[in-house]
Length: 260
Ligand SMILES: [Zn+2]
Image 1: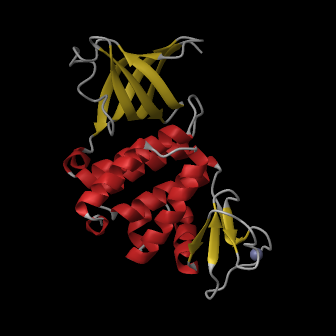
Image 2: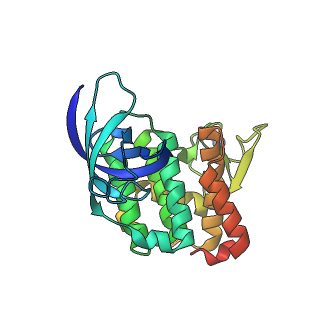
Image 3: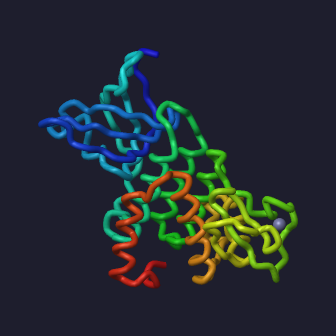
C-alpha cells in the first residue's frame, strides 16, 4: 500500500536519529503498531510541536511506500496532552510500563481498535487520578484478553472444578491458568494465591478501563495479583521489561505502600 494516510496515534517511544531526525513508534487506531521516521523533527517546530514524545496523543499524517520498513512522518497534530503524568514519578513510571508492555506484546501492522482504545482510556483515567495499582492490573488483564493471551482463572485447568473459598489456588504461568490442591501434583514454579485475589483478576478482565473506580482492591489482594501478573507476563515475554526494573527501583526507594 503506497500513499498518504492519517490516523489517531499514541506515541510509544522515540529515539533521536542522526543530527535532526527522530525514529518514532506509535500505536495507531487504523494501522496498529507503526514505526516511522520524522525528518528534521528536532528542527521543525511547525510540523512536530514537541509531540513525538511518549504519552502524546496525536493525529498523524504519514506517507507509506510499499515494502519500506519505516513510514515517513509528515505532520503530527496534538489531540490531547497528558502532562500531569510527567509531573508525578509514580504515574510516569507505571504509564511508561504500560506503553512498553503494549509495544512488546504487539507486532507492527496488525490493526486492533480495542488495543488502541485501551491504551487511550488508560491514559485518560491515569491522568484523572485513578488508583495506580488497580488501573495497571486492569490494563494488563484487558490487554491479555484483547490479544487472546488471558489465563484461565475460573476453574482448575486439569479437573475443571471451580475453587471454593476454602481452597488454596496455585497459579501456573506455564499452563496459563490455575490448579487446585488435588491437581498441583509435581508442577513446578507455582504461585500460591487466595480465591479472593483470583476473583479480582477475573473481575479486572471483564471491567472496562473507564469503570476502574468500581473496583476497590485491598492492598493484600493487590500484592497477590501483582505476583501472579508479574510472573505470567515475564513468562509470556520471555524477559523482564526495562520499565518494570525502574518501578522496582523507585518502589524500593519510596516504599511501595506509598504508591496508591
Ligand atoms: Zn484440579
